[in-house]
Amino acid sequence: MQYEILAKPASSVVKVQLNAGDHLTCEVGAMVAMSTRMTVETTTQKKGSSGGGIMKGLKRLFAGESLFINHFTAREDGQYIILGPTMMGDVIHHRLDNATLIVQGGSWLASDPDITIDASWQGLGKAFFSGEGAFWVKCSGTGDMFMNSFGAIYAVEVDGDYIVDTGHIVAFEDTLNFKVQKAGASWMSSILGGEGLVCRFEGKGIVYCQSHNPSSFGSALGPSLKPRQS
Amino acid sequence: MSFTITQRPDFALVTVQLQSGQTYHSEPGAMATMSPNIELKASLKGGLMSSLSRGLGGESLIISSYTAQGGEGEITFAAGQPGDAVHYALDGSTDIYLQRGAYLANSEGVEISSKWQGMRGFFSGEGLILLKASGNGDLFFNSYGAIIELDVEDEVFVDTGFIVAFESTLNYNVTTLPGARPGTNWKSLFLGGEGLVCRFSGRGKVWIQTRQIATYLNWVHPYRPVQKNNG
Figure 1 (cartoon, rainbow over the protein chains, first blue to last red):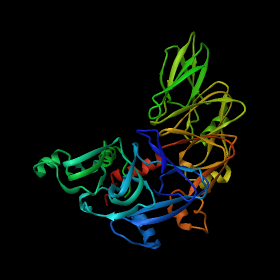
Figure 2: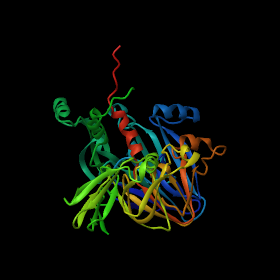
Figure 3: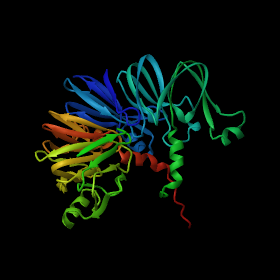
Figure 4: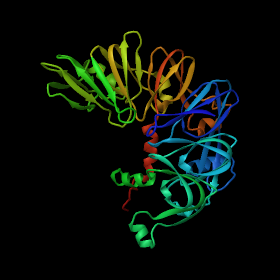
């Protein structure tokens, strides 16, 4: 896949070149601009479990439980699409080679349609991530994919043990074992220390981390904003 | 007239050198620093009708004017939001259309007015009400996020919320994405999130921004405190 990441690192977007018959699967709303010789089709992926028809999808749209996916297909050669995330931050490319990457829901931007997208993955436990719309996307297969971060993005090559605050995880390879645990020796120090829950990775594999935690930023802004009705 | 744009693309700052007696105009609040010999005047430039027309275009009715008195002066401009800035030299042949909020500053000889979009503007949630910059002189416009220049030689679709500016040589209309047209795939239109785009055709430049304030506000919304009703 031919691509270019522009306006790095804080306002990054990715420009992907597509020839006739090429496909790209993207997060809905990510399209900034594109050539006109393309078609688009929308499908849904239920978060937290699999399956679902159109009406169920509609219902979940309002409940925020669905991941809406756009499939772009080039009808002619020399087409392109520019994709951008919501938050200020970076975009990175990752190549899957018959492998699996678990991506934090808000960080999945686009992938090769040969990669299977499963938004119902709950391996880290839904209860541990109380933030609104928290879910994980399991990407498996072979092909190119793009992810976005809030702030800078950096890869940690874990060999042994490594601890990452749950809000700073962008994605990780499923070759790693993981468990959610408290950050400190006691609950008291974990909560007072402001870390709460962390993810402990074990084994060999890559963890992509983001420099900033979106929900910490949201919590910092919240008290200064006008109250909402519901 | 000499200028520089520094700190691109995230925190663009426009610095302009003014000759003695020369005047520059900007949206109110855009001035960051200036030499002490520069005199600031706020006015309804171009009279009441012209100001109301700018107001329709989503900009302030007031225009700030800066004049260098008794010598050269320097002034810097920055937009309210972090983002990019672009310079365009108007030569009378091509006008520039600016999306709501994209106007930053201009030299003398540039006229800023609004262009009535008719019904097509109303189909877009972004309010495709445009400002028109014409005449001879320098124009600066700004964005949220970086600005990318697209050279249109055929046609291109841009999500209406990401348009910053475009040349008047282009044709444009608000439409739906192919495959998202009613009757072919209604799901894409209603659920696709990208149902409405602007199709630019012909030859000319379009400047797009890489982020959108509206989607950021949607993201912030859940973090707002919830209003408590007493009784």
